[in-house]
Amino acid sequence: MAYTLTTILLAVLLCVSAVKPYSDNSHDGICKYMVETQGYVCEEHQVTTKDGYILGMQRIPVGRSNKTADRPPVLLQHGILTDATTWLLNSPDESLAFILADNGFDLWLANTRGTIASRGHTSLSTNDPAYWDWTWVQLFTYDLSAMYEYVHNQTGQKQCYVGHSFGTLEAFVSFSEEKLLNMTKSAALLAPIAYIGQMSSLFASAMVTTSLSECMYQLGLYEFIAGGPQLLLNPSTIAVFFDHFPQSTSTKNFVHLALMVRKGNIAMYDYINESENVEHYRQPTPPMYNMTRIPNGIPLFVSYGGKDMLSDVNEVQLLLDNLKDHQKDKLVVQYTEDYAHFDFCLAENANRVVYDPLMAFFGAT
Ligand SMILES: *[C@@H]1O[C@H](CO)[C@@H](O)[C@H](O)[C@H]1NC(C)=O
Ligand SMILES: *[C@@H]1O[C@H](CO)[C@@H](O)[C@H](O)[C@H]1NC(C)=O
Ligand SMILES: *[C@@H]1O[C@H](CO)[C@@H](O)[C@H](O)[C@H]1NC(C)=O
Ligand SMILES: *[C@@H]1O[C@H](CO)[C@@H](O)[C@H](O)[C@H]1NC(C)=O
Ligand SMILES: *[C@@H]1O[C@H](CO)[C@@H](O)[C@H](O)[C@H]1NC(C)=O
Image (cartoon, rainbow, N blue to C red):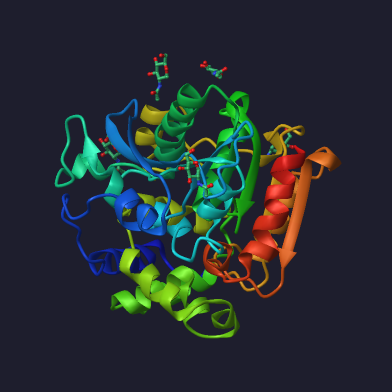
């Protein structure tokens, strides 16, 4: 990488400072605004993590068809800078959340810390710098595990998992650490992100970031504002998407991602200072996660796109190389040449291209 870390950080800070601030009470709930309006039953839930964050979850317990099978629970985890609304933006026949509910799944929507539905904390306010002292390591260690356990407590069943973008990193890393496996039936990873060393387009344009629109550009939205994938999206979906994007994430999380881009590995947060690393990890460099440790028998549906600037095809290949010993009947890999990063949530034809095969996989595993 030709870019210095300082340049990247500066660009990221400019980018973050351009993001519109949200007031803590600005939202009455995703159920009320995004789900009930479509004629679905919806419940708001709250889950407290071991480090005190109070997360909002939404549940759509039944779909429109009243299918009464055993209703396997499914947890949907959004990516960075978005929230659960990612799964609800299109019509019920085109949005994954509604489709899963209509097909007999007990649907649960995750919202990670810092997003509108998840800004509570047992002792901190969002104005406290300490509230924002986390990266994706905390998102999988605390948020994802608490939401998983909560869904398990509520339903008593193993769950299916669907992650998009950084929501896939959280699952890959958890599974590689042998976490959540005992509560997982199968997992679908859309626009998968594990290795990001070649995410150069993102940080190349970060160098010239001066406004929010450019910030979105380098976060991959370029692909759906201009170019081919536009054909796949409905203009009203784009308008609703921008109403909900971007959601807050911590600057430290960006720093962590910038370090991963620079080093091309999947490691814990690097404090740069060796003695601080020793203090946190008992070793001078941050410990690495190893994707070859993902157990061979866990059913995985991996779907990636040829026009995705964030989930680069070469890096997906690295990940798939790590999965080469996976049991053949437990791994489905799907490639859609004209799909960009957000097409997996927003494209009008995603129901046919991605969601039908995804549900077939969940039904078969
Ligand atoms: C679903 O079941 C409820 C209660 O049993 C009933 O009121 C409703 O009309 C049913 N909806 C459909 C679409 O069949
Ligand atoms: C799940 O249930 C156990 C046992 O009742 C409880 O200790 C735990 O806090 C619950 N977890 C969550 C995330 O609600
Ligand atoms: C899953 O395993 C963890 C330990 O890794 C344990 O704490 C937890 O109780 C287990 N949950 C279930 C539902 O078996
Ligand atoms: C590293 O961190 C330690 C403890 O926080 C501090 O005392 C030391 O000055 C730092 N070293 C450098 C080179 O910044
Ligand atoms: C991951 O584990 C495999 C098998 O144990 C090993 O060959 C490889 O070097 C490890 N990779 C990293 C990055 O630690």
